Length: 511
Image (cartoon, rainbow, N blue to C red; front, side):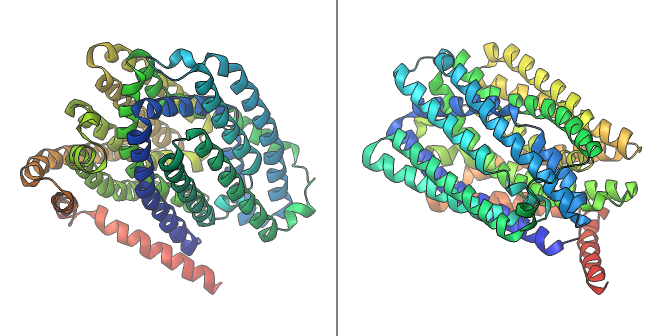
């Protein structure tokens, strides 16, 4: 296994997320204070609508990368080129479909924006620019899939880090100077297109056989498998998109767009931290993909439990920190007290964050084992639960009810994925893994309940006091986790996993 590349993928993926968190918060602050929560809410709702329209793509990227693992491992240039040719043609079709769907929806987009003061023309122009941004990304970005499958995702991470920093910075400057959000969106489109073109040029140089075999066909049997996987993944990702995108739409349509803006701000905080863990888990996917090719089911379960424990240490520490820090951060450092949400919503948001993070290891193993047909049913059930429970609770609990509905949906998702993976793939009992997750949730809840009152008493206002409670919360939460598991096989096995991975790399070099 290419451990060096896996480490690079993790490092640059997480580094990029950390940098983007900092720059992204400055950009969001500028949008809130200069343009208002209404624009932030409208922007969030429109971007979510575009995300739902983009489901026409969902399926082929994962299916192609999944099949590229084996082709790259076997150095089968013809099969690699055939998969990439299929990918390119499909993305041209997807771009056209998304453009058509977007143009059809654009006349009605204002109907789900409640209590907005922007003109109809302004709303539609913002929507159109988001649509163009998405369509261009599909036309230009397909070549990054071979870098991901070849464990060179760090190159994509570095490029997109530069692109996103430039976009955030240009948005801040343009809004400060002219308050022209349209111009900022236009610059974002140009910068993203340039970044994708650079990646495409690099792939052409790194893999010259792609140009030579530009018309290489795939064998009919493989095309059939890919199409079947696409069909299952499409449904899975469709409902996953709905799960991730409907909350803001419900808030905007059933409460107000301004509240949707406040909700967007809090989501930015939790999602920014979550993105670091997503980058870490995503960087491990190619390594897991090669590991699972060995068909050692006991080893597969062991790897899942080890990765889950690692994510628990990070997720529990992050959850405690977010709960303790989010209110003083929003009120005193980032925005002001008019942007605060109730503590019930904060608790529900942190719970949603924690269970989303703890579901990442199962999501990773499901994607690398090819259980796409089962993941489809999981996604449908999860999304329906989220939609029904959120709509039932929003009338009584407001935005907090929507967050609670999402927590319940993620718990259902974890349970379904666990049942599928353990019963159908490894054919073992899921009892130990379920006990792990329950234990991790209890430990995190207790840590939060004990540490929050302490940090609240310590905090006296100002950035220095904020840093003190941040360090205190992180040190206590992480220290408690390490202390609880210092004699557990889980902590020891993590070090054993790294030793084994390094040993495999040394062995492969010797051969």
